[in-house]
Image (cartoon, rainbow, N blue to C red; front, side, top):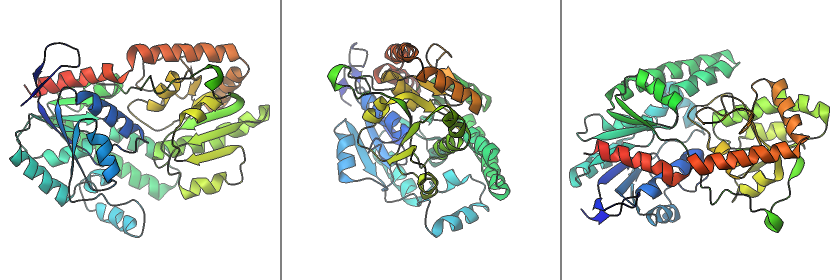
Length: 415
C-alpha cells in the first residue's frame, strides 16, 4: 500500500483500503444524503484508498467521473433498485407483506450487488467495509472483515413518525408494520455492529440502546465556502414577504412539512398580509404540484442548478418538519448563508442550537406564524440570527473538521 499525508498534517502513514457500500453514486449532489456522502468521502480520500460499490441506477459516465476525480474509485454492480412507481411497485409492496424484512431493506437487496461484493472481497485485501446506509448492512452477513455502519437517521423512528401523521387507516397500518420491522432490523444490525456512526447524540443514544458497542457522533456539515452570502452588489435582494423551504421533494418527511405549512401555517399567516413560499427541491410529486396549481403564493421550483439565489431571496428560512431523524443539512446551509431560520424542534433535532440565539423554534402552527411575523418586522433580529448561525457552522460544522472524526474511527476499526 502507498502512503499519504494525514488530514491533520502530521506524518504520513500507509493508506488503508476501505470498501464503501451504498445504493448510488452521490451525484448529482441534490439530496442531503448525497451531500453528506460526497463531502465526507472526498475529504477521507486524502488519507484512505476508497472503493465505492453502487447499483447501476444513475451511475452515468459523468457522475462516475465526478466522483473519481475526487480520488474515489467507483465500482458498479450489475444490479438496480426497483423504482417506486409504475405497475410493479404495488405488487412489490404486496409481496413484502410475506417478508420478514422492511421494504427498504428487501427492495435494496439484489443478487448482482451481493455477487459483486463477494468478488471484491475475494480479489482485494480491504482493511475495512463502511456501510453508508444501514439497510446495506444486510449484505455483510457472513462477510469476514471489520465493518462500520453509518446511520444517517434512526430509520424506525422516521417510520413511526410517518405512521403518527398518516390519517388514512389502511396506509397507517402498513406504515406502522414497516416501523416495527425496521425497529427489529435496526436492533439486530446495531447489536452485530462493533463500530457505528450517528449524526447526532440523540441518535447515538438510541443506537446504544440497540446494543451497539462503539459509536461515534459524526454530525452533518456544510461547505462554508460555497454557502455564503456574497454581500455588496453581488447579493440577491432579500424579499421581505418571501419564505424559503429547501429539500428533496421525493422524500416523505419533506412532503409532509410542505403540507403542514400549506394546510396549517399559511392560512393563519395570510391573515397578516401577503406571503410567498419558495419550495426548492427536486421531484415534487404530481399530487403536490396539483394542490399548489391554484395557489400563486406557492412556487415549486423542482430541480435547480443552484439553491443559493433562492435561499438569499427569503427573509425567513422555514423548516416545518414533523417527521425526521438525524440532523438537518438544510438548516446548516441556511446558517452558512446567514439566513434567519424558524423551525420545529423535530426540524432542528441533532444540531447544537439554542432557541432565540441561532434560530426560533415553534412546533404549533400559531407559534410558527408568530415567529415568522416577528422576524419579518425586525430586520436587525434577522441579521443577528444570521450572524450567530454563520459563526456556529464556521466553528463546528465544516466538512474537513467532521471528516477527521470519521477518519479516526476508520483507523480504530481497521487496526
